[in-house]
Length: 235
Image 1: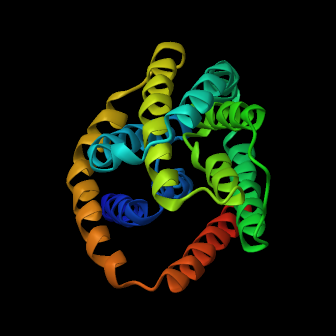
Image 2: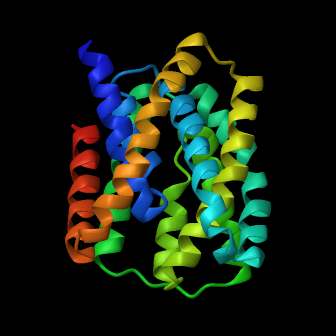
């Protein structure tokens, strides 16, 4: 019962965070799901729920999608998918948690330092490739996209829409690839099915919460969350 409550709380909070940021679900959910499920189960549950969220949200913001940018990151991600699958099939749980912890702390540090970078077509492809690797290996395409789009001062509405559109593609490809090459099990699909009500509750509450939450306060809370999660994984 305690495990199910923790699972529901993780999904709910991650879904609320997703509404505002467009990337928050996988970044928050994956590290904590690893504490409840086996690595392959946690990652596949995250991918399934993230795909569901992307489908649910994309219609309202479809007009803000940067089609040219989307095409580049999608093409780049295709090259990263096979490497991600290889990592997924051979990874060690301790190495995975260590890598995730370092990744989250590095991401947070760069965001806090107001990291800036010039956007180019080549970098669009590279970022897509990195996201492809991270999605099929650990179910987290968000960090490279978040850092790159934030560093290039991409408009927030365009960032959210293009990111969600990319997620529709990369999560679907990743789920199919993992199922074919690494397999799946009943726990993954049963847990995902049970989590659906919490996902939609989180999306609904997120719309309410972020209407009155000060953006600066939200940014500080996001940094605290990322740093705390990263340190916990390292410990």
